[in-house]
Amino acid sequence: MINRRPYIAQSAIAPGSAVIQGTADNAVTAPADEKADMLGVYPFEANEAAAAQDRIGIAIGGVVKVVAGGTASAGKKAVLSKDKLGAFEDVPATAGTYKTCGIFLESGAAGEYIDMYIERGVVTVK
Image (cartoon, rainbow, N blue to C red; front, side):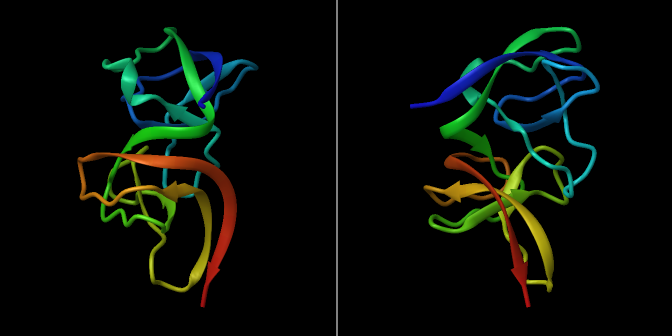
């Protein structure tokens, strides 16, 4: 089951991409970098990019189809991609603390759409 909530887009948002809290209540925008705090995902099933001021449904929990921005491995934690804004990839092997967005339920390469379970958190790589 996907938990969705209505929002207003404050920027263009591609299907299967992460969104962050916008500058107003009930508003979302695309993340500016991979360190952003993901609020939810604009579902792949929307089939078209959202434009600024569009009313859209955002998945804030459950299993969603997301776009991979790099290597995505089934069973691994997902973070926002450094190379493709709003997309997801495996937690890097580089030491650091990363905001996690979910767990990949299937594997994929950059540009592919795969299932991810939304689960926000933090992980430290040593």
